Image (cartoon, rainbow, N blue to C red; front, side, top):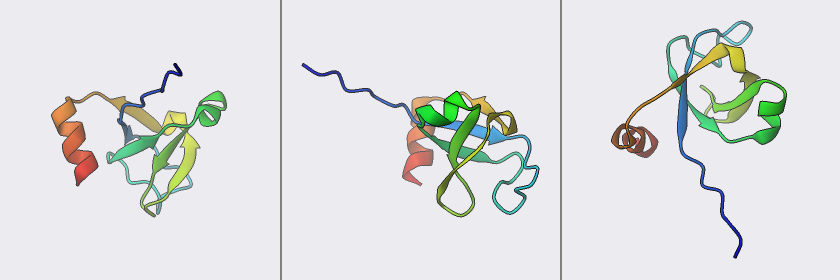
Length: 77
């Protein structure tokens, strides 16, 4: 039987927005979209202010740890 990879919803907080002030708000939470290719080049794919997912330098963000109920509330809203 083939194993399915389960991706947990992850969030990051924006610490820098050099060159992207319209796309990224400082201190705002962003939902991460899994992208193995992005990780290989030290980037992260997030859903930005446009509502679309784009690659940004990983150093612009810090991971956020939160409980599952809070994650579900953020994803549903």
